[in-house]
Image (cartoon, rainbow, N blue to C red; front, top):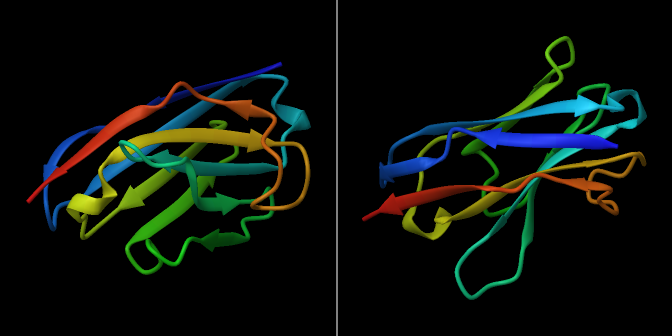
Length: 120
């Protein structure tokens, strides 16, 4: 089993920045891909960004150029740096992990989420 714990959410004004962190524990050696998803009120959960063990990254079009995903394998932690935030980025952000190689693949483990609110 793998446990994922997010931190760093909060309230920020439009145009501002936040950095989310996700610490992993447990059987972390089984994990290849780390990812971030988000779910806005009344909407389905959507994929935001992913990074594999080698550092290859991919982003949803809606955040490309504004968000950066990174990982510190020594700390078993993944980060999501969010810049130029918009009100439409308001959502609960979930950390995710999967054993397979596909950045948008089936998720094996989920965190509980952290709320990001962007005011206009």
